[in-house]
Structure formats: structure tokens, C-alpha cells
Image 1 (cartoon, rainbow, N blue to C red):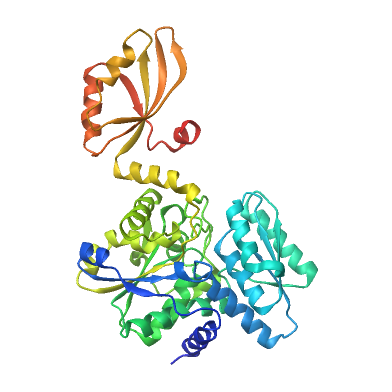
Image 2: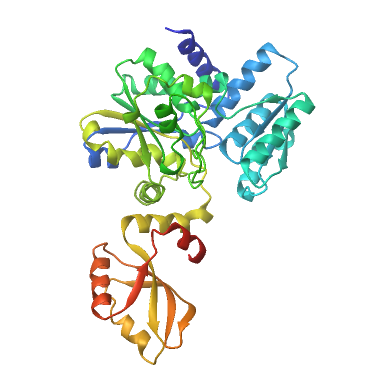
Length: 415
């Protein structure tokens, strides 16, 4: 067994001072759907509702073992890493200074403060994370503190490897596949680093959000590269550039094994898990389950472990998640409709709708001419095939309209 595998086992033992192994549970619903044995590794059930506590605790423990006077730690994070660091600071009774963007939701600030208590000071600075990170690193140098990176740190990677140790112990055999969500790459590097030694027959599939495919870009380039734009919706995995240390441990993987999950489809998966299974996952936490539909042919008849990486979901986002899921399913669309400005025009339009169609939004934008006005209209239906039929009826009746559902620019300003 390699030194890394031995260290991962030791990290796992040390974590028992904080919490028991997270559940590895067979999911009957997903197993039946995909004709496979689907197991969920429930990292959403750690004390901070994500796996990030593992890496933060391990890095802090190892540093304090070699540098006993290390009593001040700094990090920059708007989410799960901040909460993991805060929890670890309280456990070791050391000081933590956690930098967060000014735009961080109050719920995340409050949770971080709850986990850290009086051991933690939260500093809000910067509208964007890059500004927050720069400020935290300047402060760390000035204060002589120790910076805890969320993923680009060898000890953090070692801590995340404990997920793989628990999977093998709990399952009692090597799984055929492990599906890993990827953001900065720490979890993927740690779990594969352990299992490639202890379960060499296991195959891996990696999934990242379509709007933040930094691992795929790195594999193609042969090195980490910065994406020009990142969709921040999957905030736990929306990373512009995968960490150098994690990528150094992942260079062996094939580009074909790195998949992308569309953000709107992830919303559909989140709602399904909530409504059918009662499992609350954040967008990044649902990545590995979402991508099963793309792996259907590969995994049939196999034993598959999906890592549900986190469940820190703010329910104020639920309306947005529902809407994105409806759009992906084809059950909701937005149109700009040119409406005649005459008595009875609205009634005539309403007669175009089918029995399963419902108006979710209706807003006059402005009059484009004396006799016509532009209307923003949102429609919901029960079956996706209802929309082609509606469009045909509108065309036959001579209506001019534009479907803006998938027009990102117009949707941003109008919806």
C-alpha cells in the first residue's frame, strides 16, 4: 500500500473524533430506474452538510502536529469550505479569520458563525471572489497566519480521500464505478488516489457543471487553464481553474470520462430527489446523480457509488430551481408576443391556449406602434408536446411572437 493510502486511512481514523462515517445507502428508486445497484455516499450528512470538513480538519491537524504554535488560520470562501474551517477552528480551539464576498447570502454567514462560535471572525470584502481571495491572502501574510486553501493543498486532498476509505469499508467490496463531482478537484484527487491503489478494478467517472468545466479544459490542454467565463449557479463546483495539485493527481484520466451536467437539468434532479426521496442536495451535491442518465448504458447491471457531496441548500432558491427544471423539461416557456391594441384581443389570445396551458406571467413591455403592443408572457403546461401545438395555432392565427426561453441575454433583463 502506498504512503498516500496509509495516510488516507490515518486521516479517516482521526476524523472519528468529529463524526461517524457518513451513510452509504442503496437507493432503490435510482437502482430500478437505471437497472444497476446505485449507492449514495451521503456527504450532505456530515456536521457541516458537506465533505469539506474532512479536508479542513486534516490540514489543520497535520499542521498543528508539526507546528504546535499554529493557532491562527485564514481562508476565503462563500460556502462549504468556510463552514468546514470554522468547525475545525472551534474543535482545535484556535482562531479563524474567514473572508467572504460582500454578496454572500446571510444564511451562509450565519451558519459559518454558528459552527465557529467565538473562535471565528468573519470579514466581508469584495463583490467578487477573486477580490475576496486577494484580501484574505494579504491579511494572512500580514498577520503571520496559516492559509487553508479549499482544494489546492496536499493535506486537504488527503482528508477528502477519507470518503474513499469509508466507501470501501462500508460496501465491503470494490464498486464497479464511482461517480465523482468535480469543482477544484480535491475530492476527486483524494478518492481516486486511494481507490486506485486499494480497488484497482474500480472505474471512475467525473462530472462538472457545464458552465464550469475546468477539469475537461485542463485535460485537453495538459495543464490547468482558466476558463474565460463560469456560470456560478452550481456554486459549490463552479471553479474557473482546477487546482494544480489535484490535477497533478488526475493527469491519468481520459477526457471521455469527464462529463458535463447542464445547470437546468441539475435543477430537475434536485427537485426529483427532494420530492421522491426527501433528500435535500445543493446543486453541486446533485451532480453525480444527475449524470447517471448519461451513463445509463455503461452502468447497467453494475455496482455504482455516487458521492452526494453537499446539502447546503438555501430554500429561498427553490423557486429559481423549479423554474429552471421546468424549462429544461419543456414545461415552461417565455414569449414576447405582438398583441393588437383593440377590445377583445386578449380574449382572442386566451382562446389559443389548450386545457393544460396556464399563464404564469403577463406583462406589457411597451407599445411598439399605435395599434400593437409587446407583451412578455410566461406559460406553463403539463406536457412538453403542448408547446409545438400552441405555436402552430398562434402562427395560423397570424400572431407574431418570439420564444426567448433560451435567450440568455433577453431572459436576464426581462425575466
